[in-house]
Amino acid sequence: MEIIVRYLFNAPTGFHGMVTRNPDDSYTVLLDPNDSRERQLKTCIHEMGHILNDDFSRSDVQLIERESHENLQAELLRRDRKATRKNLYGPDKDLGP
Figure 1 (tube, rainbow, N blue to C red):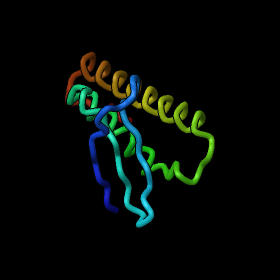
Figure 2: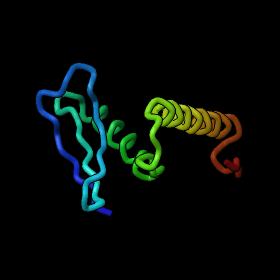
Figure 3: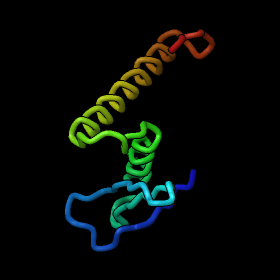
Figure 4: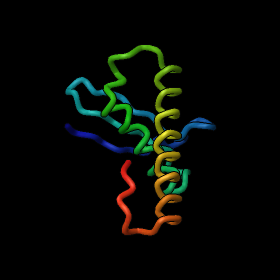
């Protein structure tokens, strides 16, 4: 799988990134060059999530984005809970998922 990452110069206000599937089945991720490196990384990871989830086979963009953000929030909450348990019980405990 080939993923091409490019900057979209003169991006519209509020644009952070997008991904498209190309005719040769590669993907192009477009990022705003004015965003911070941290924001660009987060956006790139978000867009690659669309590739891994095969979101191109679905048509409801609003639903796709909502699910993507809900999945991210759930993962962040899971990690936060795990870190909290690690702080409470120490690093040597098997804390599970």
